[in-house]
Image (cartoon, rainbow over the protein chains, first blue to last red):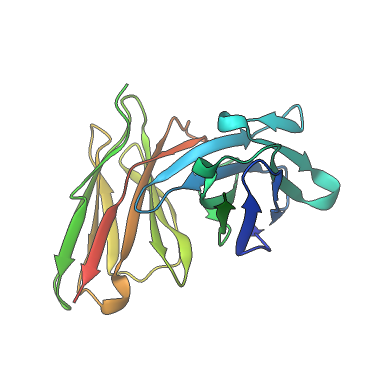
Length: 113
Length: 115
């Protein structure tokens, strides 16, 4: 079965600074890859997804992610972080043939003023 | 288009009781998946229903069960509740086909507290 590793449990960045959240996956074939964001007490909102095609994916709220097959990675980036980006971020990998989606443990982002 | 709705949003039960949670998917979506989220275990896949059939199941005991109705609405049931079942239960719907998964849209979750 597929699995996801998010190496960073907690990251703190200053407002306006750039951000990169790491995600490594394990899956035998080409996966579906996702980044979700969750604010406290809320459900998950999809930031972006990769199914196929261009390996650089643009998402909402100014986020982007790059699929690197050779590194089994799908890191999330944002050039300039806003205070409202403080939340928990989850990377997920899904199998193409079903909806068994596996999530990483999440990275909590704190934004300093 | 309305999003995924889950009811109730909050629930308090005692050990040994059973509970039923409900999920209404986005109109036109035939797949509903359920996840359990806890601080210790993170987000874990429970099961998926597609066209009223359980298509996939995670590694949870038989106390956790579900079903899907002809209108794609889904219910999840947990019997003989344990303290460790306290969690946020998330439902997600997708425009899945019979052999291909798809992007999942999540509801706000049901917060279950077991005392």
